[in-house]
Figure 1 (cartoon, helix red, strand yellow):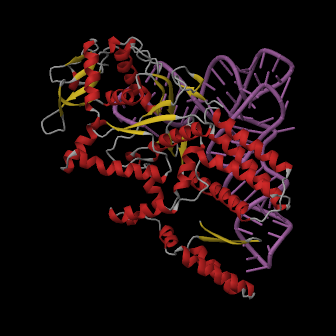
Figure 2 (cartoon, rainbow, N blue to C red; figure 1 turned 45 degrees about the horizontal axis):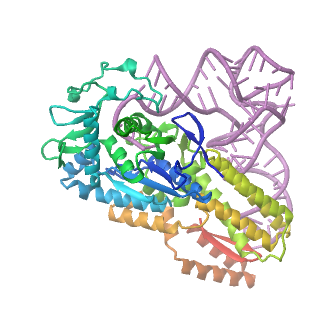
Figure 3 (cartoon, chains in turn red, purple; figure 1 turned 120 degrees about the horizontal axis):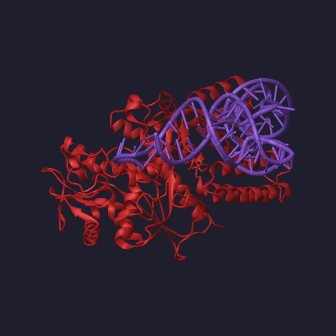
Length: 492
RNA sequence: GGCGCGGUACCCAAGUGGUAAGGGAGAGGUCUGCAAAACCUUUAUGCGCCGGUUCGAUCCCGGCCCGCGCCUCCA
């Protein structure tokens, strides 16, 4: 099976395959650690996670590199304001980033590359460009890439910049540039700012150069895939192409994937609009990590996703349905044998599911394939015609599903617990939803005791007491389900 | 202004030149001590509007309206 993925460069669906027949070499732009990541950032990382998990599912080995930008204007400004070294300033956001990644069950790339740890590689690349007369140094000590040196500029974003050359928009700070569109490779620093003493002078890297240098360091001069948010297409990725291809004379990346933006209530998310959310914010409001994950991946990556709290509720309920279904499968006592209808349904679901993902990662269609099977299996179970081998067949499909979506297996308690801990440490307890605190007030053991007491009361036909316990649990977010196979409970 | 994307039921959303997946929510029913869960039925003669091509268009073409993104740091 092969994944056909939209390629920004060619404007069509292209088969995604390693050029050398070995592991797929992919690079994805990671976060700039000047603050906590928001759900927009994580939509991109999550969609890339879907990609890598699906590739693994179909047996393609991958080598995935992600950068962490731990030096840039905002970081320098903020750390200066806080009066701490940038390393110390970024450390907490790097930690937070990995914590959030884990909460959302985003797999760690094979290689994480931090900008500050690859200064020599960047310097070498600038030197190479300088030798090719594609980079020049300005009076203040900064280095710029000469756009005129790369005629193909704009091929990714399909921009024709020839008519916009040296227009009215010249930044006063950058008057020394040969052309307004030339971009910084290396920035001279002002006194007091973090800088590196290097062969090309004292300063710090420009943003674009880090991705080129680090991608080539770990993946070679020509990548199979480069991914990132749609906003990075121009100018960031365009600049990466320009500087890399000018330096190597090789195609930098054969395949480009861009994840569309997440909107909130139909608008771009921004702090000033007041519609800005981090995963932490949502966890403290009582939403589960799995619901955030599903909501952010259920809409295919090439569609803008309009985030609303409704979308989170929808995802929560959909996951509940899947988890209930699987619990019913595992708890049920089935007679030996197989039901041909179910065997067929499982096979079809398996195929449809994989085909959907293979078709430009159509997560919505993949989800539909799974739910169709769930309904058919439930129906057959209701009729008592479900057999032991059917369980294996259906569970196998769910396993495939969770290999990519990873939401059925309930690991929601830990992220919520950690978010609460974080709220305590950072004095944000007022942001915690009261229902969440109520739900946290009972331990599993306490719940088990109450459930047992209720079962006893029911047996004694003391329904008043049984209902009383059920209501008490409901108030604390615990739902009880009586079934032929015993009592199940779950936290809502 | 330039480039691009979208407008499908109450909400989210897939999709195809041949007659509308899936999820969520609502209503009715089955089951249950009652619930919950599950299942069944039900909710778009209709896919922004107007033309055109076609035997036939939601899907192709043209125009229009509305919404959004990028063009500057940005996932």
